[in-house]
Amino acid sequence: MARVLIVEARFYDHLNDLLLAGARAAIEAAGHAHETVTVPGALEVPGAIALAAETGRYDAFVALGVVIRGETYHFEIVSNESARGVLALTMDGIAIGNGILTVEDEAQAIARADPAQLDKGGGAARAALAMLELKRRFG
Image (cartoon, rainbow, N blue to C red; front, side):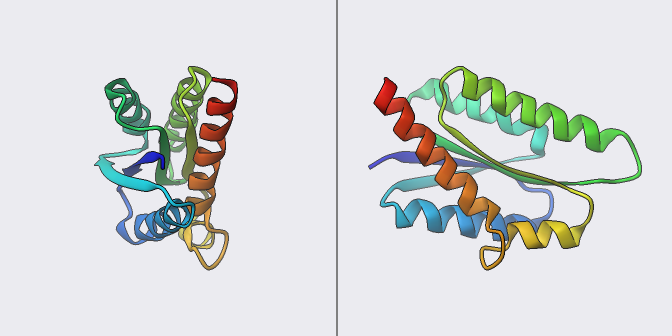
């Protein structure tokens, strides 16, 4: 049984609740245990994963959050840098599923976050578990 840490950037509660529901259901369906920690925003997700990975208590990680385009360049910074941070950790051998949504509007976020629709939270959890399987295979 794997120990999975879900790191969520809780900015939009109702959207995060959908992502979390999907991620938790996927992890539990696969027979694994999970915990959840919350960080202020998507930029903090990679840092929290790095800190948690150093403890050795977790086998895989799920990054969750929602970034909705606004009127400023901030969207691009948050979207690009959070993805870059997660990718850098993945390249260091940490099993991570990236479920940080970057969308134009709330309707897109709902469609992607809702477990009954695109279930990106569940998809991120399944990706984390697939990466863990590869890590163990090539370990």
